[in-house]
Structures are given as structure tokens and as C-alpha cells.
Amino acid sequence: MRNDCDVLIAGTGVAGLYAALNFEPKTRVLVLSKRDVGISNSMLAQGGVAAVVDKTNDDYRLHIADTLIAGGYKNDLRSLEILVNEGPEDVLRLIKEMGVEFDRDETRNISMTLEGGHSRRRILHHKDSTGREITEKLLAAAKSRPNIKIIEYAQLASLTRSGGGFWAGVLVDGVHRYISCSYCILCTGGIGRAYAYTTNSAAATGDGITLAYEMGARIKNISLIQFHPTAFAAAKDRERFLISEAVRGEGALLLNCRGERFMQNYDKRGELAPRDVVSRSIMLEAARTGSDKFYLDITARGADFIRNRFPTIYRRCLEEGVDITREYIPVFPCQHYLMGGIDVNIYGDTTVDRLYAAGECSHTGVHGVNRLASNSLLEALVFARRCTYDISRRLRHEESGVDGPPPAPPLGKNPLPKGYRTTIRGIMQKAWFVIPDYDAAREGLVRASEILEDLKNGDYILTPDYIEAKSLATICTLILKEVLEKKDKGEEYY
Ligand SMILES: Cc1cc2nc3c(=O)[nH]c(=O)nc-3n(C[C@H](O)[C@H](O)[C@H](O)COP(=O)(O)OP(=O)(O)OC[C@H]3O[C@@H](n4cnc5c(N)ncnc54)[C@H](O)[C@@H]3O)c2cc1C
Figure 1 (cartoon, rainbow, N blue to C red):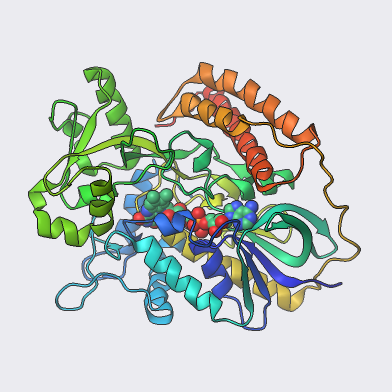
Figure 2: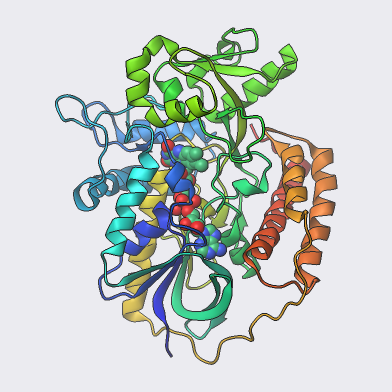
């Protein structure tokens, strides 16, 4: 048996990079990034990472309780306890071993912020670009390790089991080749690009979930999608800029079209209610007032505080013509995060042998029906490390590697028809956005299934666009099937 690498990791977000860094120096790790390594949801994370590192003012039990409340008590308690108990150590490793810098107060203590649904200030942050700070430091560390190789513009297209490993079909700069590995960790992130409007990066097309599904892995709670209440309400852009929860955590008020606060009419936690509650309240308030104009007002905090605490949001809004030190920020909900995905156990192991998943593409069950703010970077760290622990143990004890030749190369002849991805995005936006529309879901499922059939059987040339179109169509059908199944069982999303 042989292999080109011991472990193939798809994804250079926080999950993929942290997984790679946790392997022993003798393990040969290949990490793929389907685009530039700068394009990922990890790079976009603003608010921070939640962890009980200040044990005098906080407690593990409170973090667990807050996560359960946000998650509607549908969380997997065992995974959640692991997340909250082990997470602080991973966050401290970021500081000590990777050189990640979190904001500190004048006495050099880490300054914690508050976000919706948290009962304590427990969010470590690097101004309002925490994800970029963490990802760039992880990337630098990974590049310095001789056992880790990172390839950009390398898109995982297929996985075929062989002996004790996989043949991975990869498009490298558009050219197809097979790479053999003993284990694979999917860290391919979310599905935001299945929607017309999302905060997610262009890489979030659900490729890993589609691959796992095609291999027979169990996919769970794929319709549990988080709609962030306060994305910048830009006129056209598909990728919507997020106005972080931390802005409300620092005192911003949410206002309707008349400039009135309204959240207290829907939930006693007001602006700091969990995201699903705020998003739904906005939709109900929009129906009540007949207007979809909503605003955040942070001006009371003063210009110096705002520019220093939220430099990225300040700059980005200014580019859109809004000076947030003096003016209201126009906001509206949009797709933000996927709670479900490839079902994994507490070691990130899927139901397919030697296939692991971590980060946003995975379903560990920690979030329940609604993720608590800043818990996803923590989840990516904790469960990525646990994948490496399990794979390292198995590498020591099990014979591994492919046996036999790679599968036949793909030979499609036809170019991808235009418009399939736009159609899918339209279907999702209409069928399942904050409040499900079951008639639209039924119609959408029929159309998305037709598109998927054509993509599978149309003898299309394997290109990055084709992989993404097939993935979006697969994700759309999986989500809408689950939406309709839940309706038949009488299960509500709230
Ligand atoms: C705007 C925004 C703000 C956020 N703020 C926060 C926050 O403050 N705190 C928090 O905890 N969470 C936050 N989140 C959520 C969090 O950032 C993500 O859930 C997390 O970073 C996901 O990490 P990941 O490693 O799983 O995926 P990603 O970081 O999205 O990385 C996915 C990687 O997979 C690669 N990839 C995809 N498909 C393929 C393929 N076929 N072949 C090869 N490579 C592939 C991509 O190129 C990319 O490198 C935010 C998300 C967004 C969008």
C-alpha cells in the first residue's frame, strides 16, 4: 500500500489549518485551498472567539447554559461540554504557540467583549478582525512546518475509496490529477453561496458536504441555517458585509423605519437576544410597519471609541457612504451560518471510514438549532484538534494507503450551461429565509432536483464552476427535503 500523503485536508480556514498544525512532524499533511488562501469564512470573522479564560468572572457552566439557551436545548450535551471545557486551552495555545494577538486593556489583561446571548464578557477579539488575525497566524505557522504542504487553487472534486485510503481527484489550476492519501479531513466551510444574499466568502459552496454525501456519509440538520440579523443592507452585493454582534454588545440600538426601538416588544433581552430571535423579530416588524428599512445606531459611543473598537466596520461603512460615528447603519438579515452538515462523532469521524470533517461543514451538535455568537471559531479549533488526535492514533496502529491504480480520469465534453447557480440561489432565498415558505420549498425542490440530475448526467467538463454548481444543487435539494420533512413531522424552526 502507498500514498502521496498521510492526510489530505481540504480547506485553509481555521479548521483546516489548526488540524494540520496538530499533527506530529513525521505525518505528511497536504492542505488544499480551492482559491487564494485569503478567501474563507475564517478570514471574515469579526466578533471573536468565545472561551472561559477568565475564571474569576466566568464559569464553564454559564457558557454551557448560554449555548443551550441559544440552541433551543437541542444541542448535543456531550460535544458541548467538550467544546466549553477544552476550548480555553486551544485559545490560549493560539496566543502562546501561534502568536495570535487579542486586544488587551491598559493593565495588559485580555479585554473581553459581550455578544448577544452571552451572560458574561467572554469574547476574545482582535479589534473587529479576529478571524483574519487567527487565520494569518495559523497560516504562517503551517507554512513554516516541513511536514505541511499547502496548495492554492486546488479544488477537491472527488474521493474514491481504495484499500486503506482514498484516491482524491483534485483540480489544480484547472488540471485534473489524482492524489492518494490514507485519511481525509473535510474542512470546506459553509454553504452561504447557495443563497442570493450571504455574509459568506465565495468559497462557501458546500463542496465538502456534497462529497461526503456522495460517499454515503450521514448528513444531519442541514436545514438548520442561521440568518444573521444585521448585515449591511447594500443595494446589490451578493456578499453582504456583516455588522458584527459586538456592535450591539457595545451598546448599539436596533431601530425600525421610524427610528424607534422595537426589540423589547418581541423579547425581553432586547437587542442582545440570540440571532434567530432578532432576525425573526425584524421580519415580523417589517410586516407590521410595511417597510424593510432597519438601522443600527452606535453613535452614542462616540467617534474615538467607534473608530478604535470597530476599525474595519467603520472603514467599510464609510466606503458605502455611511459614517457610523454620526449616522445610522442600514441593516437587514441575511444567510450567515450552517449549524448542520456532515455528522461527526466527538473525534470528527464521519460515518465513512477514514473520512473526517471539522469546522462549519461538520455537524457536531454543539450549536443546537441556533449558534451562539463566537462559538464557531471555538468549535473549529476544538474538533479539528480532536480529528488529528484520532487519525494520529490510527496511523500508529493501522496499515494504510491505497492499493491499486487510480480511477479513470473524468472525460466530460459539454460546457456548463449558464444560469444554474443563479436559479438555485433564487430558490433558496425564496423557500427558506428566516421564516420557511413551504409552497416555494416544494416547487424549488422539483426544479433543483431537475438541475442536479442534468448536472450529473449531462457529460459536462469537470471545471471549478461545474463542481460548485453540482454542489449548490445538491445542498439545495438536501436542505429543502429536510425543510419539508420537518413540516410533515410538525417540527418548528423556532
Ligand atoms: C462575516 C462572518 C463573520 C463571522 N464572525 C464570526 C465570529 O466573530 N466568531 C465566530 O466564532 N465565528 C464567526 N463566523 C463564522 C466562522 O467564521 C466560520 O464558521 C469559521 O471560520 C469556519 O471555518 P472553517 O475552517 O470551517 O471554514 P472556512 O474558514 O470557510 O474555510 C473553508 C476552506 O475550504 C476551502 N474549500 C472549500 N471547498 C473546497 C474544495 N472543494 N477543495 C479544496 N478546498 C476547498 C476554501 O478554499 C477555504 O479555504 C463568521 C462568519 C462570517 C461569514
